[in-house]
Image (cartoon, rainbow, N blue to C red; front, side, top):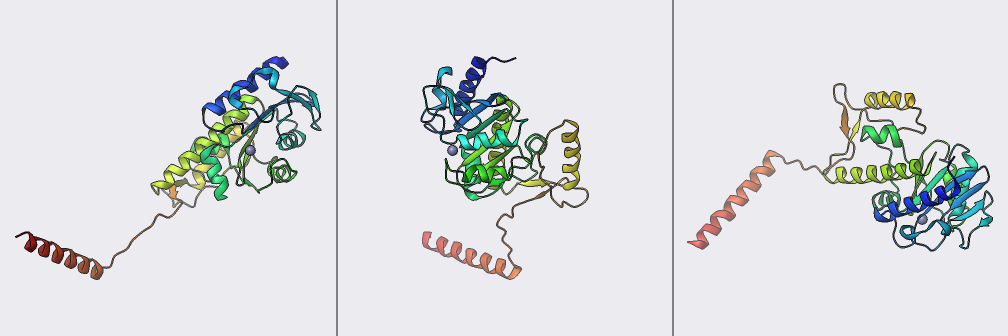
Length: 264
Ligand SMILES: [Zn+2]
């Protein structure tokens, strides 16, 4: 069995990782873990996640009462406790503001495209939890709608939240979520965000079930028979009639001739 000090050290370690990866700025973000049925360790408010030491971590009960610690727990504790209340199988929660995922959260675009096998199988669909004012009941209420059916959410106009069976699991889900958002963004820039077909997604879903991975999966696209994927977002397309093309060629030729005359 992992001792409490080990859990405290693990939270500090995950804090360093999210800080070094640029998932948080200044004192943003919060991390927590369940250590017994009604006892939780959670990060303190107003501290950089990159520079925490084990004794800074606060011990609270399921109602948010401080049981041990010199610091105040994060002001976003309610959404962590909501996840633990709703999901007894969940042992850790990570909340950060990774740039790509947060950009999707600001745009109100869920990560629900079947763009890569790994994200279909391990991450699944990441919905948008509607906007709520931090530290109020609004965020827990918005998260509640998705907590039983997904492994994480994008908090609208705010950031991202993941939950897992261990600190490592919740952290890796967050890393995958940000990676998926980043790849999605980059592929959109080259108008290449092709989505896997329903048939291919179904094969991945079968693998996912066999592995015992929970959560909703993207549906996949209606790609025609014989192709594995179809372009999702439409790029800007220009069509020119032969008449327009002839006019352009004529105009360019005229300009070139004029320019040559001037030079001579
Ligand atoms: Zn936040």
